[in-house]
Image (cartoon, rainbow, N blue to C red; front, side, top):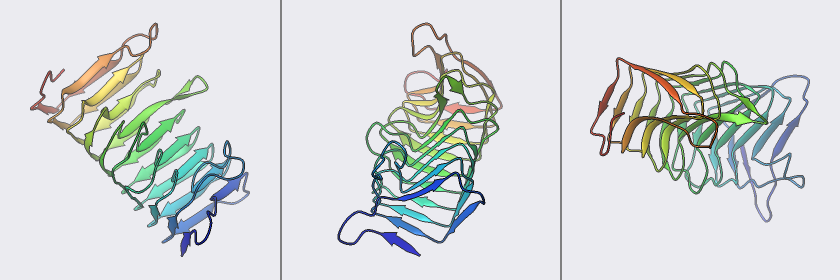
Length: 238
């Protein structure tokens, strides 16, 4: 199935409080914009209090690819092309799993993959190919932070800011068996967040792992680093 615009934009798909899970397989989402209510429908595929799966799909030339507010969301084996603008995936208050996906270059002040207020989420075995902000961003929305997110087996390359960002009070973020290359920070942990970094390779970054206060009064970050290679950092490994 191909979903794309012809003579005018087709806005996007909105799942709003659906009663049964939705499934998208082998779908090309192309040329989507925001809906008439852009605060609510702000991606090619938007879910509100709805469960959905996206598998073996492709997103091309959309203003934003996927946004979810609550609901169980499972993304797998899906390609997010460079031509998409805005954050490629932003999941908030969701039961979130993102695995075996490919994120091509992300332009502007936009993260490739953003989890906010997600508990027990998973980010597994993805490849992220650079961008002008963060690759994976773990944070908060409405004062609620992420907790117990597993980031495992990912390969993340060449982000202007952080390959992995853990901030805004997020707790117990497990980062293991990842390859993190060529960013300003390989991993940045900030503002009273905590992260466990184990069995990672962190190479060719300006700073390998950095713990710091970004927003005044929120405190520094805490990271426990073990069994990890931090190499070729141009300024400091830690």
